[in-house]
Image 1 (cartoon, rainbow, N blue to C red):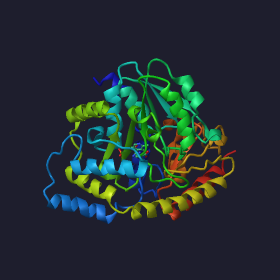
Image 2 (cartoon, protein in one colour):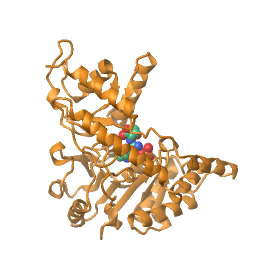
Image 3 (cartoon, rainbow, N blue to C red):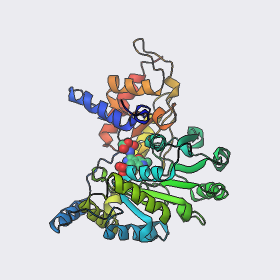
Image 4 (cartoon, rainbow, N blue to C red):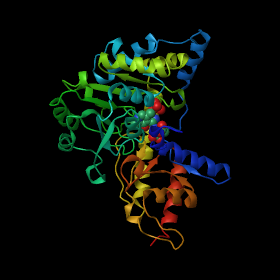
Length: 395
Ligand code: PMP
Ligand code: GLU
């Protein structure tokens, strides 16, 4: 009965592990959840107050599909201020979360058989959204030894006359790696040589960058007209439940996304958009404070994981994930269980050590696991101790 497209779709591994963790917790097991990519901070008070104010002002009706004018203006100002890129009103589409923004773009661009090059490790939903839109995901990967960053040469080799889209996130979910200006310039050099390719640059972790200034590939000369910048409020403003994201790109693509979204969901929540404008326009101290906290935890989680024998630890410079290589444990047994691969590693760590994390297989690297360190220091220390004690039984 179900469509072939849905039958061939994989459930989101991040959401699945979060659900499994919750199910175990409901049975009374004390589970430490490091599976979901969600800041453990509340939305800053002034943003919550703005939503209440929006309600009081009667901003409770349908908005234009592409977004409330006040929010679109705040987004345009933000892109100029933070990224040095000038956009017009007809180039911005506000959506129900960055996830919908990505789906809009894929549905607007891809014909059956068009190829979308995806840099691995990648965020779980890219591959499924591309497939659901009729496209063919073409994955190019970089492992831990390359800091999980694909090169311009790899990109050049993967481009064919069917390539329509290139998708990546920087800062990256799941690796936390950040492309430098010069790395983006080399990628841009390759992309500019080819016609009819759009870059989907997912910048939702823009603010969570520990060592440098965020660079958008759209700010590189010649790239703005062929880039769809994806961004949102979930991570930088701790607004995951608000469901608010946006795209900035060429007007023809924005107009197509407007049409797609207009038939599927319409505009995002009215008072949420009103509060989103306040988030962008106001002081970013709460974001900066959150990033200072994530930076401390990044250092802690690297230190803790580095002490577990056999695990290779990366050094993320953005987002709030660690993506260690755990392949040393594959094939090892404690007499009762054998760790066959990263999926089994995560299943056992959840059922036996009571820590929820996500297998790297879902992100295109089956040697690794993803740890979301958006959790308290105590939770992180306890989680790593429990994992370490469990692994110490394996030979
Ligand atoms: N892109 C990346 C890289 C993400 O990690 C996420 C997860 N939140 C999204 C997009 C989707 O964001 P949203 O919650 O705004 O839909
Ligand atoms: N993006 C977050 C994550 O990677 C939230 C869950 C999801 O939307 O997949 O965990």
